[in-house]
Length: 424
Image 1 (cartoon, helix red, strand yellow):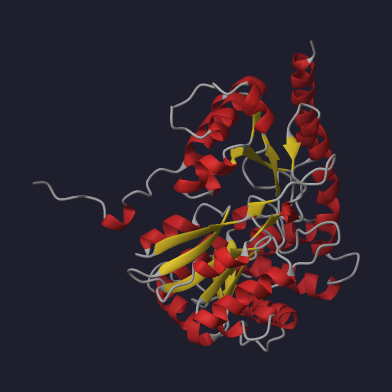
Image 2 (image 1 turned 45 degrees about the vertical axis):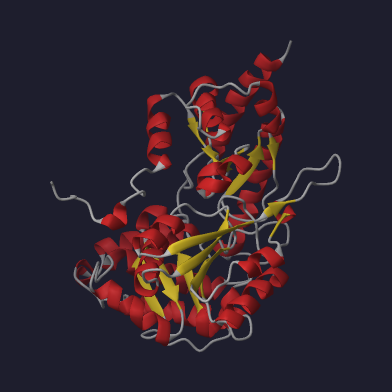
């Protein structure tokens, strides 16, 4: 009998729905509002920092320290130490990774063992489950539950809440970690301090690590505040806090991320890092270091990019909400992130028999229909849920509003055409 070629840890995780939707977006004439990246330039100071890194000191073409370019780890320790209320050691409490994705993968490989359970709050970014499985762990899902908005008002991402008793029931002696994502992708929910305290109490009670994905921490709207769970009493010692330069400075292709935490945890991530990628590109790290040095000087002032970016994106969000409403989609108002989701229940009632496989969730069929017939790309929200829960949440699609004005105008043109087609 032939040997199985692939490792068992790859069984069941080979299919990626993103591949299909990216392919469809290339096949048709569309406005791509699906993938989460800005289609505008990073700020001038970031572009200049990258140009300087590539054309200045020739030694930036060579290796740097394996766990992070020293000026970058130093500024990250200084900048985030103040926010977390900790005195961070750049060598022990900060690890630079190939994007936040790299930080997540390194954390799962370092900490999750065969049979360990990992609690994932869904909807969840779709890499958490396969990363858990690849490490030999068992994902345990708990869903945020929506509650209806007041009559005549749009729903908000804040209407989706954890049920405390259900969350507590997911903790067992085998629970190793809980994955938290705030602001949440795809929902745009910013977890309140009260919600974070619930999670923190359970993690401390059961000696469970918290892997906190906070890549959208600067993208919060309407006066909401991002709170890092590691800043809560007793949580620094059992939390990994993950961030992204790509999301912070609108430069997702730089692929510079980081993870911060206590040395007793981070030393195990360093072991994985040094035995896998070993080192991240020096020039990109140097550029990010310059960006944070600039941001530290301007932080909290009107000139701060971390203030300017959400102020610029909020009108985009509101613009998209109005446009989507005009054709019968029901957007939920996000508190943070790049994204909003829209309820397509009315379409599910009016046109339930869209083409697709018999067991294919409705939102996936609708998203394909919208690409082919309306020239708009969105992502079905069911892909952010575990298999047993996909049918319960198959009436939402996700849009990215962190886009250039020209992209939003192109969206409006497609929406106006759609609107005319709806008229009797």
